[in-house]
Image (cartoon, rainbow, N blue to C red; front, side, top):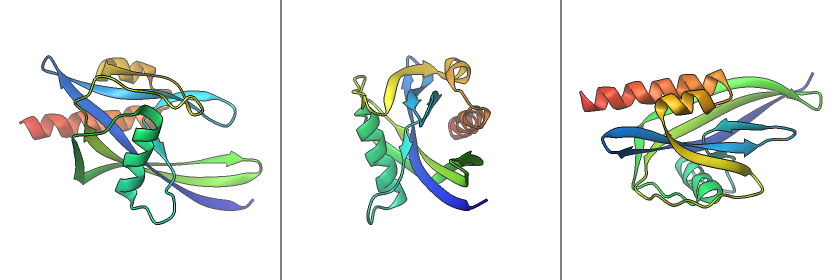
Length: 146
């Protein structure tokens, strides 16, 4: 079976509201399914990883982070089969603090989205890898506040 390496870049959008951290999750349209995750996508032309992550966040949600954490990235890797090809996927996420309340969804790629607490996001997120990444983000935020 042929194996193809695939890389995506995204932002885990966060904000603090009434003293509680919230995260923005999207209900993404995939090839034949939908799933809850964080905004992400593939690089175009000569984009850097950070530029890709920011563009994808904006295209899918209209959100623009006021700050982007670049010293600490969050990654997950997985494999899946698509049309007889094994896809070896790696996704790199940046943590982006967002201050805006409004968002606009890219209808071709996103069914729904919402700000939620980390506990609510853990219930919504479809895949365990995304939940583990959320746990890493939550731990990182707690360490930064300590």
